[in-house]
Structure formats: structure tokens, C-alpha cells
Length: 548
Ligand code: HEM
Image 1 (cartoon, rainbow, N blue to C red):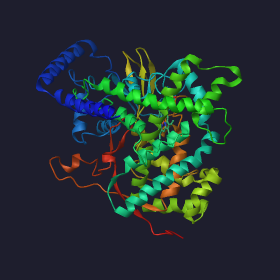
Image 2 (cartoon, helix red, strand yellow):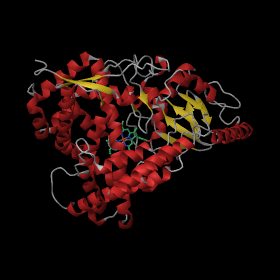
Image 3 (cartoon, rainbow, N blue to C red):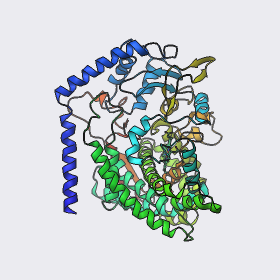
């Protein structure tokens, strides 16, 4: 054990050192020479391949890097790239279809789709393949048989065995387990309220969402909220060692021992999950009211003697997809929950309406709420205002944008003009840009959950709101995410007042570059966009009863 710990420490040390070495000046010079060479070749070969598409000001040598640089200079350095694209569209008045050539900092020319009609069209069958950059970024975390990365018939087969476990009728049975994990979270909030400490809200919520996803897919208690679980630590290391593809520093991603890190922690994750999966496979015949997603998948794969995934591939498929669900199901939901607290803090009128709705459905006796959810989880379907708050938060703070690949000759029509693409493109469905468009949402920067209430006067095109994406390749876990967000809101918002506690920065960078339009809680880049500095917060326990 001590040997392992030493090895891990050595690895971490080496990792930090190698990150230092790559900033050595000689590497900078070589890198610059490569980039200059690259640009020269690019001007000669690819000059006019996209010039008929709408775009920001173009430079023959640098493509759109100068235009994007102009936008980037006015924003914090670590801002999430999807915000940069929205700013670019606003600055150059680009409309809802445009192209941006950011090579070599992007893997391909980018085609930005910010038009709901076009977005709907390109995300329906036949499903466009994902851009290979997705694999480059996350394959070390999710594995190659992941639902997230697979394509074609393989993707169909994997989706078909896992979909039954994510059906709303099955997910609702997990409410009891989600309540139990959320009660642990409530205890943690209570402790912070008692100490008055400032803490990173996102980290606390990450532990909660990891524990929930462990229960939901494997019926395993990961207990990362209360203990340091080796598996969770290894998984977080894998995620944190992901290359940063949004960086404008070409060397930020050079790390010679990254493959070793990936191998080491990947093996730890696999070892832990294999044991849990083996155990579940033996228990799968047990009849239980609430079953984890894995049990339904194994049943589906053997239904009526028909095997969708051949037995020799099943172990790898199950393992990679358990990794995928844990990965895709925790920091996405944690970011959204963090922003829910922030928006609620900033809009006391919204808080009052949410609390009123929870009182109406679950009564004002807070001590009974957890039990009521367990007994009648379908009560959670009677919370239209709470759901509207979640939707509004996801409109303003989506976790990212899907990136598909379209190849030479692909045709699309927009505003009556037909475009035939030359060469391949990374097609980005610009969820954030659509969410902030004044043409699609009235007063787009305002937080107004009412717009999502049934019968609201704002008419919203469903295709404009796509934080879970739409079409056959939408988010398989959206029902689970919505369920957990509702439970967390119901169990915490009447008891705790979570307040952001950013500390004003004193040194160096002007304040405007540490904030987005004066807001320090902007989204920063992660595999899923997340709140700056983990949203430092404090908790105050409300005096009970908080409302009549
Ligand atoms: C607020 C929470 C969440 C958000 C905003 C979200 C968003 C998304 C989006 C936008 C996609 C499409 C990505 C693409 O096409 O590149 C996606 C796919 C996916 N999500 Fe989620 N997600 C959330 C929670 C979850 C949860 C809880 C799970 C748990 C299993 C999950 C599992 C997946 C998987 C496996 C895919 C790939 C589906 C496929 O390709 O067939 N997500 N999600």
C-alpha cells in the first residue's frame, strides 16, 4: 500500500515537473517554427475553402484567429469557449450560421449552427458522426466502447441495451436512493452553516452527484461525500489530466507523461468497477423494486434469448459504459445545481415562488419531505415552477456544445442560400449562443423561469432550448439529471440559504478580466463548463419555519 502511495506521489511530482519542462524556451522556439511553417502551407492550400460562408473578418494568414483574439482579449482567460463563440457572433453580427477557422488551435474549421431549425435538421437521423476530437479529449476517461464515442451500428446496439434503465418509469424508482444521498449533502451544508466557513460549492455538489450516479447505475454506495474513495480520486485524476483544447497556448497540452497517468489511473478505475460489476452480475436475477441501470441493461441483452452485445464483448462494453455514465452524469449535473443556487440567491422572488410550490406539494413540515418523496416520488412531477427554474438555468449556463464532423460536399440551406461545404468541418451546435439570442428568447440575459411555464406568453421554439441536445443522440441521462436536481432543490431550498462568496482579487489583472460583465461567477472551461473557482460559497441555515 505504502509502495503504491509512493508511486502515486512520484507520478504526480513527475507530472508537475514535465509540465514545467515544456515551458522551456527551446521548445517555444521549435513550436513557433512549426506554427509559422503550418501557416505558410495553409495559405497555399486552404485559402478559399470557406469564403462563401458567413464569417468574422478573415485574415489570409491567420484565418479568424485575429478576430477571435480580439474577442478573447476582452474576456477572462479561462472562460468557457462556448461563451467566446457567442461573443464573436454578437461582436461581428454574424447571424445564426457562420464559420470560424481557428486552426491550429482548433482541430478543424468550425461551422457554428445557432439556428434551431437547422440544428433540428442536422441532429435528426441519419445521425452525423461525432468529431474525432471528442475521442481525443475523453477516450482515456470513458473507454472506446463508450456510448458517448461509439458510432453507427455499435452505438445503436449499446444505446438499445442501456435505454430501458433510463426510462422515466424506471428512473423514478431511484428517488429513494437519491433522497438518502441528498440527506447526507444536507448534513454537510448544515456543518458549513455551523462553522460559517467559505467552501467550494461545486466540489461539495460533485461528491453528491458522484454518489447519486453510483447508486443509480450500479447500486453501489461510493460515499465520496463522507470519505475519500480511491476510485473517485482516480476518476477525478483522469478527468483533470485531460488536455485543455480551449487554450490558446499551443504548449499547454504538451505533457510527456500524460499517457502514464492515464494508464495508471485508468487501471485503478477499471479494477474497482470490474469488482462491483462482477458482484452485480451475480445478483441480477434478484427481484427488487428499484434496480440500477446495469441490471436492466443485462436483462435487455439477454431478453428472449437474443443477445445484442456478444458475450465476448459484454464485459468491456459494460465497463466502458459504467465509466461513461459516471463521468457524464456527475460534473454536468453538479454545474447545473451550482448555478441553480446562484440564480436563486440572486432572485429572491424566484426563491419565494419555488418555496411556495414545495410547501404546496410537500406541506410546510420540512421534516416529512424526505419520507413523502420516498413514498410518492411521482409528486415530483407536480413541480412546474421548479422545472422551469432548472430549464432557465440550463438555458443560461449549458454545459457545452456537441461537435459533429461533416465532410466535403455536405450541403445545407440557410436563409434561402444553399451552401456546399469544401473539405471537412467540425459542426458545433451552439447551445449557449441560441440560449442567449434575442431572436429566440425575449430579454435573453434575464433570469425569468416563467418563460418555461406551460401556457407562458413567451413563445419558445422547443428546438432553441437544447442543453440535453435533441434527436436520437440526445442525453440518455436527462431524466435522471432532472430528477436529482428536483430532489436537491426540494430538500435544500427551504432549509438553507447558499450565498456566493467570491473574494475580490487584489493583484495584477484588471477586475474586468476576472469577471464577465462584472460577474465573477462565469463559466470556465472543463470537459463540461463549470463555475469559476468552484463557486466559493457560504451557507446560512434559515430559521424554521421559513415561510407560512
Ligand atoms: C444537467 C445534466 C446534464 C446535461 C446538461 C447533459 C447534456 C448532454 C448533452 C448536451 C449531450 C450530447 C453530447 C454530444 O452530442 O456530444 C449528452 C449526452 C450524453 N449524456 Fe448527458 N447531460 C447531463 C446529465 C447526464 C447524466 C446524469 C447522465 C448519466 C448517465 C448522462 C449521460 C450521457 C450520455 C451517456 C450521453 C451520450 C449519449 C449518446 O451519445 O447516445 N448525462 N448529455
